Length: 450
Image (cartoon, rainbow, N blue to C red; front, side, top):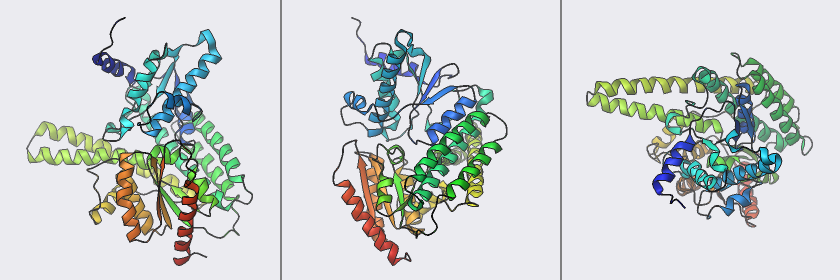
């Protein structure tokens, strides 16, 4: 038997994890946010890609079987999702199953966060299983703000990027619409039933219209959804304490991983608002602008003309991209807020100023801690009645957030709670959330609540 060396492993990862043309393949998208993931699949479908969202959390035992427990929890969940999908596909197709027909989508980010290692570890596990070594993993990186180079044809990239960003914003708005409706719904269950149907409608709209030059039909459909959703709200129900949710992007968004924490908060009297997916996309673009600006300054100081030209082009490219994203996001929120008072998103530059103001933390450190700490402070100053930090057990950026945000919230007399998740049932968690909501309600009454 031929010995496999570490060099062979690195070579395989380089060859089978990267940017692959997805046309003609079954493109598999993990479900992180149950709205944005399905809308994104619709965008890919509109551009001729056979994309689908994998069933999630059903393969958790498989994910645990091939991990040690030391990994970041989203790595375990997403590994279980792809293994479960492949297992079911083998059963469904039998001898006709061909692993080369599939490309698995697992983006990454650089830095101390272990997110950058998920697809490498998934690659190692898939390679250990007969036939699954031929399943390629498509990866985009935060280093270039998730550029689509190599994933779809260059001539389609610009239109895809626009539609892809819009689907993220629309997914965030559908989330915020549900959180605005559900605590005040006329009949229990109306909000969930409505949003499920709305997501199906919007996914179909993206599949039909995303590749067209104008995206107006999608926005028109969104406004209709918002108007219908507003009708579910019972205006006789008084306002409730407003709770801000921050933390690691996957676990705070993936309702099964966090055991539907927002629903638990609502059960004990909250109106909760989670941090958006768009916030992370804007942050990765903002970070490229920030780094290009620093490089420009250093090259100017050293009179390095070649470097000046390179980083000036990068600065202009990412500045224009960020400007477009902000403009599109602001436009859509403005349209929606004419009909319902959902929470707006904040600019990343403003969050950096929040940290600089009191020298609390620095964007130089990076990771989601930048966003979570600054967002917690911003929400506290905007009158929120409590902050929840949701994250995977052992997550370094989120534990960093906890160590800084908790004393800051205590100083501001804002109730605060950390919720770490590892897939296990924690019997004391609901009691802790109930106690937290009691504190939040006291804060609410003290600061103008009914």
